[in-house]
Length: 230
Image (cartoon, rainbow, N blue to C red; front, side, top):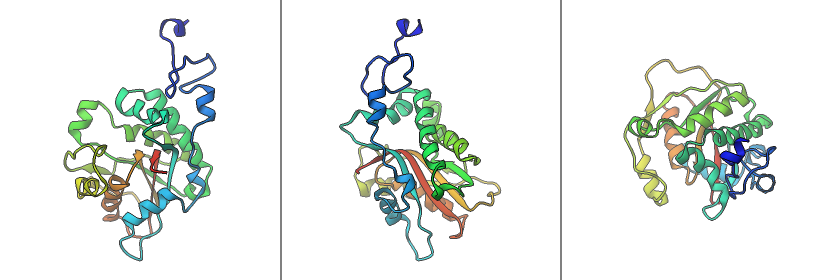
């Protein structure tokens, strides 16, 4: 009856959902362009990220995974956009649980013992009311059976990364993150979470901030809902 008053529609194609469908229609769900990166230690996303963070020979290789390929001309980009811009927490949490299930099934992420979201600047969080990366991180942490902690803070409000070129993105977030005050937990494998991986500049800046507290014996890996450019 609620569907008659406020019809639920597929996030990707906009078709009205059947009672047994949730967030995506069965057709779009079956066609979800999954990356399968969670099962691959070396993949295009991981190689691009490691190219940014391998600053010395002692840096452990960072694993990287995304749920789906994010393409500007495809409807699947609306999954992460629904959470980030439209407060669609249901879709965001559903996608995050799907990502978490893929990571939990992979031996590469079996030793993750801390999940850390990319932080928003306090002014942007105040305007938006939430941090989309934290919403995703909490669901992924539950799937992995690991705690979720906001170890990082954003020192300054940076420009939106959406319309910047690669080098400009790196300059925009350089030095933008630092560790929160307090005791750092003892861990072996940290998983950084964001909504979309584009050039990896934001995640690399967060990686650098964490590396100031944790030596190379701690692996720092990343995961996102979408990955651009594959």
